[in-house]
Length: 154
Image 1: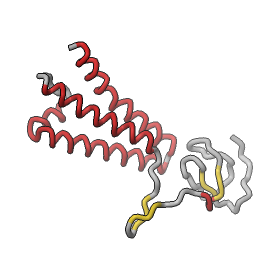
Image 2: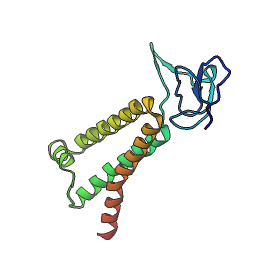
Image 3: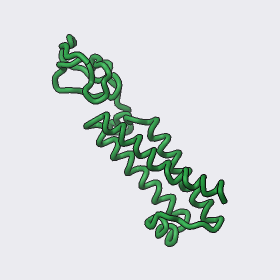
């Protein structure tokens, strides 16, 4: 990582994460290590209606997180149908009060909350946001792995 001055009017954006510094005095992004490109080549915002939505920072991580979270709901419901119990106290209360629809809404809200936190943190610190998304995948995968192990041994 060199600290060489770039020559394109100090208007640059990171080619990997979209980080845009006030002044460009380095050739590589401090957050993710990618090189800077002229700001005219930056990612375009998608227009939906009257407001612009920036592209998501870690769509591949979010796809895995949604997949694993959905697998958790399916496996939990299958275990409950076989006579098992829910270990998570909050999820157990939601299931007891609202059933399958309640647990789907609860899990959806958790997924949206985690993605929003990863996006907010990632806009300020790209590396931390990416690691947070990866940690969310690992944490969400733990109950899935345990559920599969419980089903295999039963």
